[in-house]
Image (cartoon, rainbow, N blue to C red; front, side, top):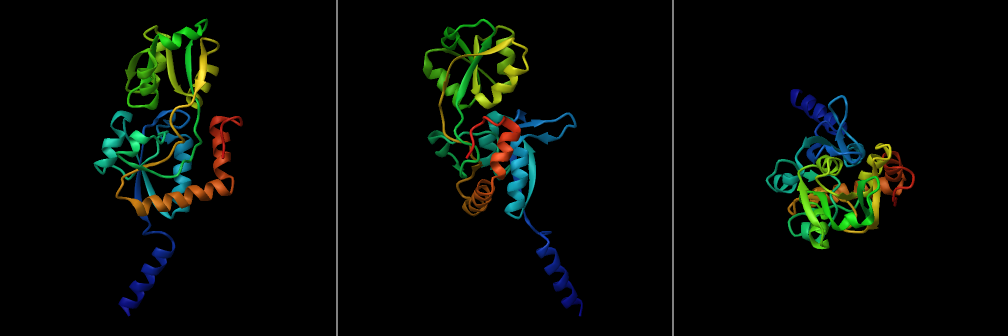
Length: 241
């Protein structure tokens, strides 16, 4: 009798997702509106909302792990978490080290930002970019002088304090910063397209998990949920699917 009752209890817990697979999601927590720490000290942003929704649709129990950007891929490979969801563009170079899910954000142009009054020439001067990003790689090959910083916030500070003439970053990241600067910061030069869309980084050995997350991404795309999230966090004029 006890065995029968235990079996019944296990069936109920399984049906309600109590034994759902636990997956750890790594994010930077310092790239608003993609991912950031809010005033309550909690991880917040587009990717936090999206990640939670993907876990729900994939019947996964997800935990969040905050990790500095410059070690985010090494710590994925070391097993500190199971997937990266941190505004990471899909590139051929990164695909040599890790796999990616299908993209959950379309390829977004990158932009330069400088101080008010700066001309387009600053894009060939001293340009700040976050370490280990597609932007740092582009600046290094563009003829400009690259100065790298561990966080995106530090790249903006470098422009404000005159340490750099301009910063290169995702347009979606820079837009609210420019709008909130009260004219102190402006877009300079032309937008450029570097890298592909944004996807979740995965270990090459985790094909089954990748398939589950791809199915969830396809689901939020097909019913319009993903486009609503993009508009909420990046504005109605942001690239959508």
